[in-house]
Length: 221
Image 1 (spheres, rainbow, N blue to C red):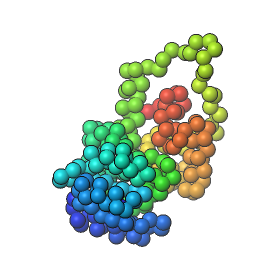
Image 2: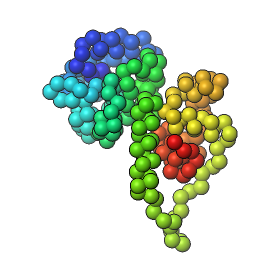
Image 3: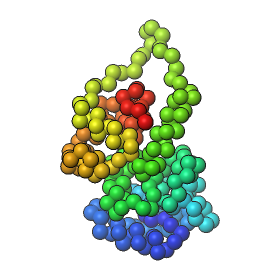
Image 4: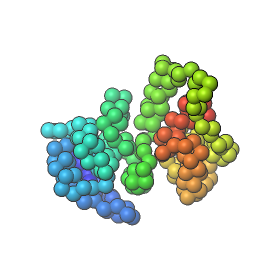
């Protein structure tokens, strides 16, 4: 479902996504209130949500959808990448935060990624999130080593040199397509490397894998 207060943008996104394999646009809404009513009626898998809209904005609408309809995943799609909106959107429950200058392919890949359980962040947004995480990690360092007999963090299986290269690009917020172009690999090969990295770092998705890698000192920013 596409939510945006500008009809021309809603219709343009619907037209673009109509030709994306495996994606069907089931509804359009012009503000957060209308979006909530349509989510209730249509139960969409994914909602592309604008931020600044009349009546009810995208962030409070995201918060309510995430709370009341947890099976519906929200991806914020906006022109704004200011820190306060980014962090409020993620705290509200958005599984992705993309900017409107994203290409058609990146947008479609993000929708499919969210359905696979992945978090999707624009590279600029990912950088803000990871920088904030690093700031908090510095301000609130990890607790001291556990006392004898207390459970320790499970060991991480070493990454291969190629997986380390892929992980470094994940930290930059790069998509599978961008990583493949940088390393001269197919998207399928990159996808396999990402899956193996997620498994080795015992994470749930690529974003958690990056956070885990930074926390354990495997990569830096």
